[in-house]
Image (cartoon, rainbow, N blue to C red; front, side, top):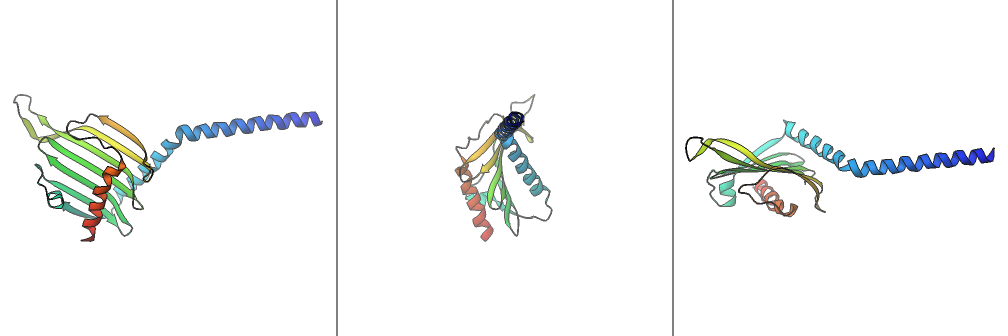
Length: 182
């Protein structure tokens, strides 16, 4: 009887370790996907929140620089703070857009988008009435302070430069916070 019990206990321990290892591997393999799903859920809540107030700032005035196509910085906020920053800068060949989603003051997702004006098929000039998205990067931020992210890219940049790290977005966030105090 003791031998049967010890064999059964060893079998149960083997099952326990196997389950523990499988759960550990699942956490490693799918943990970031779960976090991305959570971030997307928060982004969706921000985008659908009709109670958020919005302020717009003229990028030409804020930066003290005139852009070919102008520029606007839109800030969506509530009593808890800034929830979304959207900067659109018009340049001679298209538009650059940066969108920063924040939760509890820290960015959780950043989108960079580049759009180019279309070319006329029969003329050697641009069609300024149509923009085509040529590039987009989505940066999912798991830990802002430690620069722990996952980046997804579509397309290729034509005239914008790739960011070296999250610190490059800090000036825009600080600028918006300063503008909101005025």
